[in-house]
Image 1 (tube, rainbow, N blue to C red):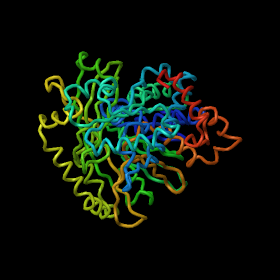
Image 2 (tube, one colour):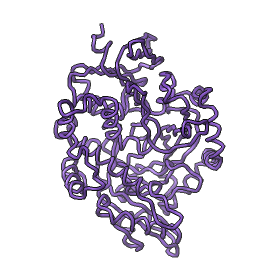
Image 3 (cartoon, helix red, strand yellow):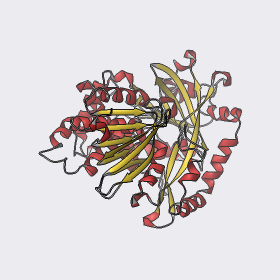
Image 4 (tube, rainbow, N blue to C red):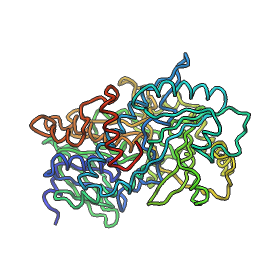
Length: 498
């Protein structure tokens, strides 16, 4: 017989990924007496977008991702997006450090590892761009320690595989930040839910697919889920719903009927990696090396040759190779995309597609290319790669946001992560993709502040928030001293480079 806290919980989580895990653990830190019920369709947590093989594992901090720093018409580089992502990752570092100190996360090494972040370009035009980017970023304290070089010998020291066999007549340039990280978000998710499931008032229901989300006359939400093995239905009543369901967030928002989600649509993007686990190769590369995305490609397809530590073992991943799939989740249905279209979002979806024909063409070409052609793109990053040492791995699904323009019918394709809330703050959902998991702590904090404003007060959660986040309420972009101080402290706690 389920307990009252499981049937009438204070909070319901839909989805067992890193977003839900982070939000739930933060809530329990702020108010241990809260009851929380979580529904996950799959047999365990962290098996979709949070699973290590399904994402890049980059602790996104704007260090190496060139798509976060667009070049202006005058040749200068806009670093505002990189700065925002950079300091959002500081929020994750503060929260993870708090959990390591408090014992919720027993071992930082189980999910985060030091891994330099490198940007690599070649050709005169891209070298000039990278130099302009470096000049803009290196002068800001948030990117302390960034190095720049056009010397092939220096770059070979940073990323040996990337330079061996490269044409010496082609100019090359790279930047490096040694304090970058690789994060196993699947392991982090499992660790967090493992700790939560030991606490009073937390209930997790795996193999439970949410089929309905209805607002009742008294202002609560009735959430109905079906056991995928037995067909048994379970309904709970709650005052607050958090949808952290990855690509499935959009259909769930549509079920809720909140006006704020009415014209949103989704554009699913699939992906592939090439994987190498040969120790003779993996031991010679220790960096995340990002390059420039091909013209017309989506930002999530920025190519990179990555050191990964997954389940304690090192490997290399190259990609992602983007493609189009009508699934919203890797374990989803081919009908997901078509079922998401309705009278409210059809026109925004069509106009967004019309405005992004070059992207559509690019994705079609990506889907159609042969395995051998995919391998040849790896040679840009690892000229002496041996095709026999690399295998193909299917990455996770991403659903990019198509957002109505100023409330109108025109749809705009957005790349990034976005929080959608009901007007009464009783429901919040996370849409979009990268930087995604890297800013899960920032998203969780936003939900706390915007959906529980009555609790964030001097007599409520505010003192505790300041304990958990030592820089709470401070803009680290404008406070060099505190920024450097916090990074020293969190690096020490998380056992990563400073």
